[in-house]
Length: 406
Image (cartoon, rainbow, N blue to C red; front, top):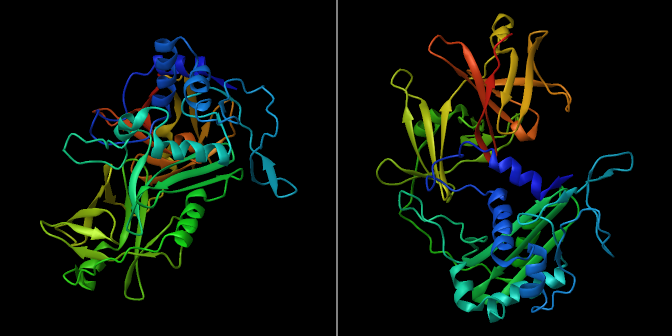
């Protein structure tokens, strides 16, 4: 069970940030948990009490509350599930007594009342609601897609403003198409359900795509250039790209995928920039020795991602000893031990099952534990390993220092 107090204590120990403020945007649950604490300090009411009084009651959202006690019985509550178990399903347990980023209990009908508030502004007023549309601006002046707890985007040419959510086996997406005064809400209690995809299928039924002006001036990279991109690439945060040449097409295959893949169409832009499938812009550098692409930089709406060419590697048995030892992180007060076994590196923790670390680049390993899916080992000037940092989704550069043998 995770409580509000647990999270506040954890955050109070935090020593570093994922990145410098304004360098990029990355969704953060902790920020919303702290906002709940600000509401409590400023109003004297818990987030549950405050929202009940000033938001849910005025909007007649009678089946909505922030669930701040996980043991509380809620009539007609829907539980969540994941694939697995003898009957094909298993109960996905939600054991939170924390609010802000999670624990909002509601219904589709009540959520519709919340979406309609964007039209009439009964709660908050239209001026405040308009401020919610203010998109963040990075230090480089680039406007990101994230505003105040909503994503600003487009779908089939229509302005689309929405946000998804997921916890335990719950998967949700609520969105608005303000030009058409259309709101779509999809809730599911099954972890593998694609709520966003279903919402867009509903949009396809109700909104005809706007006609896109064909750009006849687009110039696409030819096969001579595309073949230079073929290869395997790894980012410092553990993402892997595998680009192959298949049937005269450049395709991206997921790890473990040997056939098929997503075709990459590369449009040539100005200033050594390219665009991938009407999506992110990218730049690349070639290796002087091989004339193949050595480095790729993706310019996504909210961040830049760099990939380096890296052939698959196999760790030699005699190399494993350099990584063994116990590693400790002061912020989480957690320790992990790495041992060498039959030529593999095994990560151990007294609470979790032993897992194998898989090398993906020099001193970089993937890990089956989702909360630390990528480990990057650090070395001193003498090339001795001093620790590793965790880069896993929304947690970046979390340092585990190697403990010296006693």
